[in-house]
Structures are given as C-alpha cells and as structure tokens.
Image 1: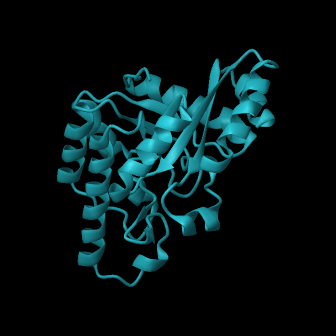
Image 2: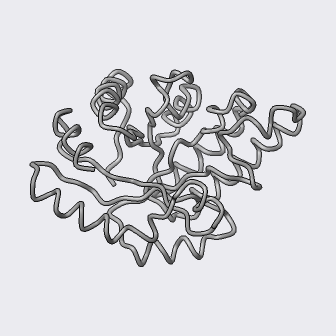
Length: 235
C-alpha cells in the first residue's frame, strides 16, 4: 500500500482510493480469490490513516463489492456498517460462472452466449437501480471475454444509459486493460458514446494492481478525459 501511495504522489495525483475486492455472499469465491475485505477492512483502515500522516496526499478508504442480485440485503448491511468513503459495485460472477473467463463459454452456442450477455446486462441494470453503490465498475466487462465479445447490442447500451442517467450511481472509465490484449477502456467506445449522449457522467479508474501501473494509467486517463471532454462526476 505504501508503494502504491508513493506511486500516486509521483504521478501528480492529489488523492488515491484503495478499492480492494470484497465478497460477502459467496464463500467459494472468497476462498479461491481471497476477496475478504469484509474481514480485514478495519486493519486496512488503520494502515490508511497511518499513511495519510506521512504523505501530502488524500488516501480514500473504498471497496469494490461483488454484486449478486439476490443478495442485496447482505451487501447493503455490510456497506452501511463498514462506512467506506465510497463504493464500487461489479458483476464478476453470474449463474456460477466467472464473466471474464472464456473456458465455460468456448463450446457454447452463439444463442446461449447471447442469452448469457442478456442476463449480464439485466444484473448490471439491477446493480444500478439498487442505488447501493457510488460507482458501477467496468460496466461492459463481458467484452474482456473473447467468447462473449461483440454480443452486446445497442438495446443493451441504451437501457443501461437510461438507468444510469436516473441513478446516483455513475460508471467508471476503467483503464485496467488498455495496455493489455484488450487494448481499450471499459466502457468500450461504442457504449461510452451512448452513455455520454444520455448525459451520464463518469469517474476515472486506473484498476492498478501494482505501483508502476498507477502513473501510466493515470496519464492515459487524464488525456482520455480531456480529449473527449467527458464530464467527471463528483462522488
């Protein structure tokens, strides 16, 4: 964490938020991926407070929650009790499948894959409509999966734009795969245009998991927002 904070300071940022992954509803996901911030956030919060005394930088205590449509009550209770400074919600798992992993979908028919993308956007709409989160994370993460890429439709985009335009939840522009094989931000430029036309505001998200990525992705996002004159939301 200290190295990430120093990287943020070197990048010229006035603040940095730590939004570690958290899952309060799926024991198997917690076991496999270690998304246990619900058990460790108080210790991490103490570390954040100590770090803020050492740097001229605001360090925000945040969380990225796995969203399950049928478990809103548990998620709401945890977010209320934990009192993070801001929260992100993301749909990583649906119907027992990891949305970003191509394996389960490689041999599925196009119709079945299209149906899964339909359900993904349905879950995403429920996430936005729940008003549980400040930020909706990487709102078209199905595009990261080669087996699901290109199956989202204009109707998906317009329904999402309408929902976000009426919600306190705002989408992030996520740079987590800009310098990887995917090669662009989430949301994909096609969806980004639909959201912007609907008057939706955005927040930048580096999705940095190691210090060198902080400055590289921050510079990219700064230029990306300026070039497209994207409106930035205030959380």
